[in-house]
Amino acid sequence: MSDHHPFLDLAPLSAARFAAIEDRVARLLDTRQDVVITQGEALLPLEGAIRATAGPGTTALNVITGPYGQTFGDWLRDCGARVHDLAVPFHTAVTAEQIGEALAEHPEIDFVSLVHAEAATGNTNPVARIGEVVRAHGALFSLDAVASVGAEPVLPDAWGVDLCVIGAQKAMGGPAGVSAVSVSERAWKRMEANPNAPRRSYLSLLDWKARWVDAGRTTLLHAPAQLEMLALEACVERIEREGLDTVMARHRAAAAGTRAGALALGGGLEPYVHAAADAAPVATTLRAPAGTVASDLVARALAVDPALPLAAGGGPLAKEMIRVNHYGRDATPGVVRGCLTALGTALAETGLDVEVAAALGAAERASTAV
Image (cartoon, rainbow, N blue to C red; front, side, top):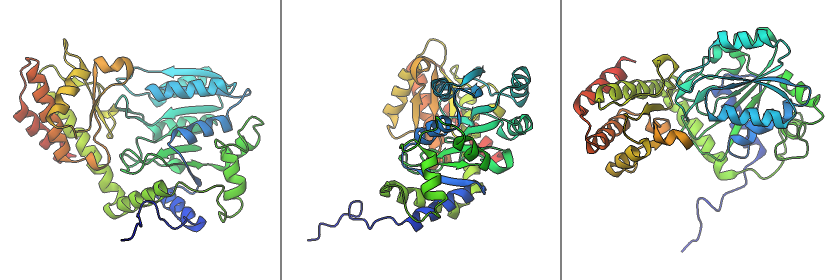
């Protein structure tokens, strides 16, 4: 009997194959910028990009539309940057006009940090319009597109994004242990001019530039995370086969169906993000009815079907927010129907009047209308 294991006894991943996977990610983003695949969850390139480009001479505008924006502000301050936070309520999105007003008030700002879609709060920000404002101001633009890629357009070149970080674990339907960042030429120059940018470090993007990008991508810096790289390659292949437009349409339909279904379900359940235009296609957040606790409702719903992509909000939001994470393979009508049915059961168990059939009908009409 052979003891060969397909996950363990793998041939080494070559530099050429690693580079080919980077090229496929670049095509997914429609970018001519350098794309570096980083060997870790997306927090690795997110922190690496900030620490590489920000320092004591940086004045940053840090946009907070969810918990990750708060984290990025902490990193910027830790780098010695002067930070102006622009925080908006988590039930809405930031506008290009708000960004423009902040830049006009602080013309010295030379770095803008923004999260595209916040899966944790269910909102998404209008990056295309924001990019125009940031580009006109001349600031470096850093974007967290981890949750949005695959669910809605992510176009670093067209939008003037200098640092665009993606992860595969949400709408792309891929692995969590590998991520990527596209880097513009002026972002590389900012890093090279920053004496505090990480060097000879696992956080260092400059190491990848010097020893990988500029060296012709022939010798890897270290042994790649092989299983994750193969999984990333497989998930990009799957998106290519299905078609990116089709993948994004599935996410839009799932979001529209979930929102309409929740409104029709009754029982006091309502969308957490007020305006549909501000709601992310990757996840729909719902406000638990008065007198209920979101985490309790989620537990009751998961008792109906533990496989459903339902979760309570994080931290203090666990009392009031329910998340329907309809991303990746879960962006389907069947998952939407299952979530609405289970939430209806949970609400009914607490004594609230719900209309599951009406919710399912509304969900179907909304999703097919997208």
